[in-house]
Length: 339
Image (cartoon, rainbow, N blue to C red):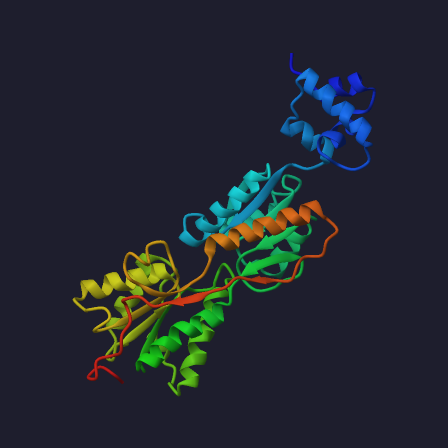
């Protein structure tokens, strides 16, 4: 027969809650009594179950993860890294993929996550009402996208600064007509495309280059979208001599479009990305590297730390380091194409 926590409690003459506290190393149990309980549990062959631990602690031992696009490289990498940290600590992951406006509205209307999780890692930018709904859960919250917001532990990067380093590199090479492939911020309220666009505009202004909205194209943060956007830019009467893509996936799509149009990179058009995707080195892409997996691990670690100290105040936003990586897709413009 399976030995229960009640069996251990009866053998030691204490309550089941005392047995639970003793076996989990919690306070409120003398060392002498703890030793007796541990010995009795070992003799009886008792193994604590997840359900029993949940009953004793009031926890579900489950972390909710809310993600807009689970199939995208960035979100998948963050999720994988965070899940490994949660799993090592004995927690399961309950995943909600909110890739459509309908799914997102349904989730925040019904909040099916309530009372089912001990904490939430949100990989999307909630609007004020959505943020309030998550805060109403009364559990620790964390994110790896966007800036600081009340109630959330934030782990991220300097998107604006990263974009500035990418575009400044192109300006320093001598490019004056610099296109940008971006991703729309709606309907998922992303601040990332806005911050990276601002970095692009700031460098153009510093260099005395008049911005031209015709040189901006939406690539939707996908390879296919990047290819479409690059094709649009090439159709201009005066196409760009260099392109800053707000993600490496869009940059790879741009490279595919340039190859299809028999244009050489970087001799005809320079391309720089952002992220340092796992395939970026394979294609020789110049890019801004961000530690994607490390952000997931750090956010998970901080969430677990808040669970152990539930009265602790959310830590200040954690900014992870980024770095510019020079590879083979950028070079000075041809004299005849410089404008």
